[in-house]
Image 1 (cartoon, rainbow, N blue to C red):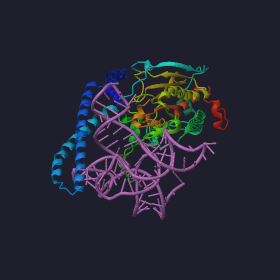
Image 2 (image 1 turned 30 degrees about the vertical axis):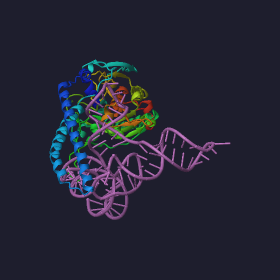
Image 3 (image 1 turned 90 degrees about the horizontal axis):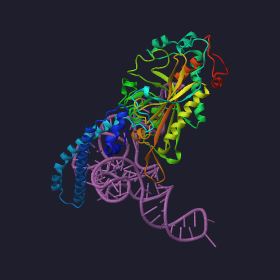
Image 4 (image 1 turned 135 degrees about the horizontal axis):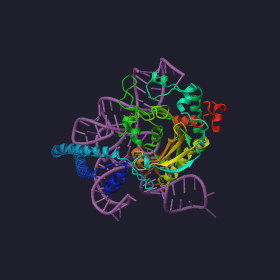
Length: 428
RNA sequence: GGAGACGUGGCCGAGAGGCUGAAGGCGCUCCCCUGCUAAGGGAGUAUAGGGUUUGUAGCUCUAUCGAGGGUUCGAAUCCCUCCGUCUCCGCCA
């Protein structure tokens, strides 16, 4: 959420910046609602003050044994006025709140202006795509040929866009996960294990709700396990439970930055992306991901974004997978993000770079929703800045390893960094 | 799943319709005293929002005693629902 004070004082400037990311802010409506809010809120508070002081007077009179009947009569009419004023004030504030919750973050000044992913800017490349002396297969062909991938089984068990991995491939996915977690521990991250099911407050905190409910798997409430009326959801990314660790917390400045890494499955219904990447492991309803989260001092967040992106890159470098780093333009950046770097890995099967990690600085956008703050000495609490990045999407890394390490006969060489995690074997 | 107890400020802990944003203690900050240390004296010490304002200063108003409703002129206190914690039993990895 943006700072409401900023929206009041610099509404036109905010609207202009949001326009770059294709978001039309209804300036007139906000101005009118804010004017109403000011009037209604003031009125309600004045009436509350009036009631409080009169009630206090009644208490005093009663204590002195005076007749309070006339005082009660006086305050009688106040009650209905107050209820009316409070209801009107609450209603307009709720309306404003809902609009504000749907406004995306402002892009950082260093973010290139653009309207779509075509305007993203490549800022560096690492590694050279290998020159194969045979025609590269894609990961589906490679995995199916070896009997490691069974799409039909997944469909039988559940539905489309899930996968069953078998044997060495399943094991390699686990090995990759371990390798990533261990590497990030070396980078200074502390490993966390978190719930895969979260409540609405958590999803609002990181910005998935209220706008993106359609992308989430919501759990039904239909049996004796549901003793409450809360709506629960499967996590779309570990960002949600991990970042929410600091919700409603005031952190001691000396404890910043918090660096956390976790591995979870991610569940996405991906409504709207049907038809894209229907084949194979690229776009699934369920996938494994290792996620880095940092909670930092506001002055350090851009420094932290560079470092965090570097941590994700380190995984690709150790696996010797060619990739490039792209700065997302204003039109392609995520809802909550102020700046995002995507890492795109080379996939020989597609002869293209494909997203494998997304590293973002949310500045105080999530922190404001989360009420995640830090305190410096005796000063007032201040909002922290939050960042996260995939380090990496494990399923896609598996794809990248298969395709980049394939031999002509369909066997797969094991990246050196991964060999210790696979009992030292060199080829699958 | 069954039965009971309980959720108050950074922490501990009073309060049981009005004078309580909340006693007391601990912790913390500042000051005084004491030639180190220890002890002592004094003051201060929640968060958010609104109004005023050039101002995140000051002043002022409002809200917050797990959360949300309700009763009442007035709720930390009474009622309801939910969430959570603890103890005992059951079940279970």
